[in-house]
View 1 (spheres, rainbow, N blue to C red):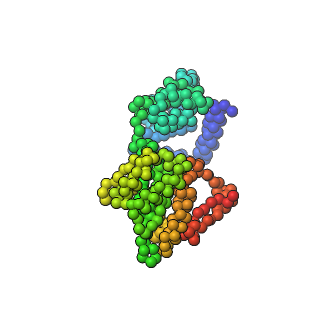
View 2 (view 1 turned 135 degrees about the vertical axis):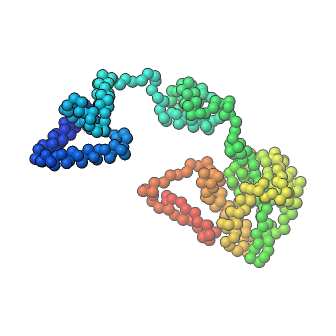
View 3 (view 1 turned 180 degrees about the vertical axis):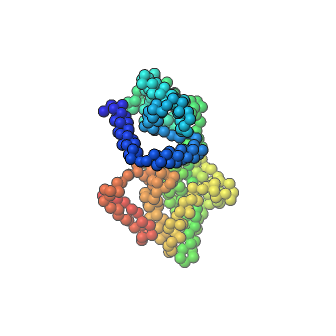
Length: 368
């Protein structure tokens, strides 16, 4: 049904309701009608003092215009109406304009789809050296035929600078690119149940947060530390991440001898010394020491060296393969490249729990 037909039917229906309402006035006396007129005039005067610009619907405008034509000439100006005669003429002019004015489609090409706009901005944000033509070519490879001028217009409207002006790396990008080539080494001690102190040497990768246990001893010396890192590098000689190591961060402990540094410099690793009494300079290693103490060592008694090695081996297996990390988007170090699985709660079969270290640590997984 055409819109003008719907409007006409609504107007006729509304006018019929008003006509039947007026017919009921015939049964009233003249005194009651005069009292009602005075009452309504006073209400109108009160409303005009409070409301400056009342909002009228199209039906109100049609009724007021029709009734105003029934009044004698010049009588409309003496009434306290909420609209003026000039307003009635303006409404009529607007109807004439709507009658003889047709909407036409504006000139120009259609607007670029929102999906393509988001994709262009994403590529520009993630690839700071890509220009307009490079982004247009990448979109063409994805099946979107977008001209370089369109890409330029999208980036300009979003306030994104051209490639030469946005090609500089941010600190976050710079540190993330350097993290994969940095490792840190450190010692920490554990007091056993018989008040014997054991020392643990470990290496942690900055990029993956993967931890490698180098050795545990009650009498750490420079020669012992050298032999432990040699054994560690031999075990990791086939590990792809070890071949990417370029920097080793360590403190100035006397147990790190020149022979210790020579083991790493022989494979092309540069030694970075932290300032004196500045543990925050080796913050990632210190953060892991805090984690292993809070989650494991502070909640159990260690009997001896063999017991400590077994506990740390079990914890490292949990830490590297299962424990989520905020810096890795809630993935574990060994699974940081795996996509996160999204489970449907309505279709979930169930969750199983696996206990580690005698129930001290729990791991959860979906039922296969």
